[in-house]
Image (cartoon, rainbow, N blue to C red):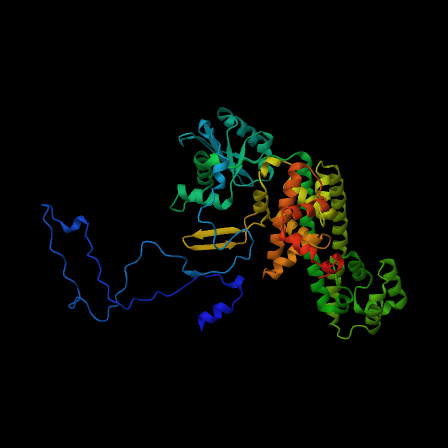
Length: 530
């Protein structure tokens, strides 16, 4: 019964490996005599000791089931597995020849010639610095305040060591900006990796800022030859990235305020929630300010209702009758006067804050569009289908303009989180979604590839093929994102805008299954309507 329930489960919900129960051999097989090679069976004089008596009185009891000895190598896989749903490049049965490690391709062969290696453990008010030499001896250990005087002391203390490589547990922020201005070669370390390096130095669990810096400095000395340094972006890309990320923060705050406004209206003014669907639009906040309560809405009358709809360009035939009829009927279930007084004040306050916040978001959008138009890579990202004016600047700001950061398309796909993480141990092979990535870039790519399906026919065909193969919506978008990022990386490296006919011709020349499906696909308008 248990096995049947596993077989009926969906492929992407079966996370465990099910091993078959081994069958015992019914024939009696004589076991070979085992040679005892342990020195414990001999005394000091070299005489062999008598073997120990068996515990069982009967040497071969009938209840003991005799089986063949364990073979030296398993004849084949002994587990039932499911097809990976996170991407087509991860196979359930990969090649017997393991792929070369990526780190072996970009080794710094002159790393041992470095005389010093430093690490900085940053904090809000002060920072700890440890410097070690090439054999691991600590040559500098100091702490300085995060002030102008403190950074001057940092320059004085680091002067004997020169511009040595420096490890730090972040890749952005004011500390990184100060170090880049001083032209230090920075090596950012993932916090999880930094924790493991600290445990290597202090397995007892000791945790101090100095131990963190010491662990990073020594790790940089021993493993830094395979690490990638932090490449500084140009000023145009840096400014665009900061503007886009700050805009996202403001949009998240707007979403939180909208949720609070809806909760307040639900308690005393449900007819307002029935009147509009999207409460991120400014006209919904203006409605709350114009008619803060159900009584005020009913007292206003039909003429003011129609004027409000005309002013905010909501006079549409598909929604006009519903809204006017709803407002004329009025709210049937009213809250108590105390609740109406308190919650109406909160709703009007939130509506006022949202209107002020929206003006700031519009200002951010204006400056982002100006910075994006002046960027040298504007034509590349502006030509991407579905990116439009909002997603194209975010893609450009997160990818940047330093081509050496991404030597191949795979590195870009890993940073964007669309390439799965493979797990292999013995006969077990799995694929997981990649969580350790640039979350802003991952979210932007997800929105972009979803929008590209509405304007690009081959993208919709590829997405539909993945959905028919059993992938979820998010998994199919990740697979489509891998396709798009391969194209984008090539365009980015060659400074070439995207051209749809050229890409379709490339699919035809390579004999892609997408090209074959395009020949039998319905018209573009009907396909994108699915």
